Image: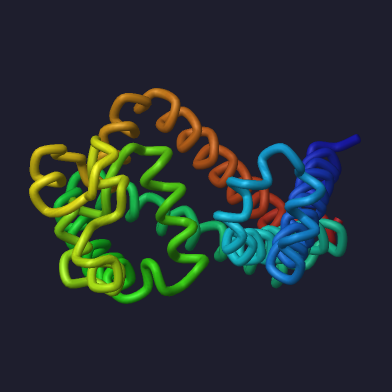
Length: 241
């Protein structure tokens, strides 16, 4: 078996796995989005928390669709020795890779800028939809419960919000350390940190793990681009022989 054939077979097998994994993720996402209650019954013991994340189905659909597309392009491009499919596969992976690097740079070097951008998007959702929309409320309740945090920045994100006005000008109980009424005085005394800062601190504490996972993903993406470009460049020479 020549080098070209070996690389081609590895490319097909790897992308077949990506395609199947994406298909499975896509199927789970559709199942959760369409019939979340039956999904919760299947997973049983963690159903109470899973219901809070029923909206995660849309995230699974998006990621699954991307993986299915990449797997299809890589597998068919290698099998049919199609330069068009291979260069399309390379381009998509390159765009994802650049987007990841850009996001990492913004998050690490310009964390304050990233925080301001996210705040402009998240805070209006908290003010208008928390307590009104079931999915938004559930996701934020679980987030604040697990991270022991309050809002995006702090309790002020809920000031003059739908929840605040509907609950006699009180804040979610997550914003207070005590079990008494969570009013402004109680939140000031509790000093519960915002979820963005809490998450940022957790990521810094686990920087080695996060960095290792990120490096592994980036290495796979670089390997996929190198292999696809190798096949792309060798196809003409192989056909001439």
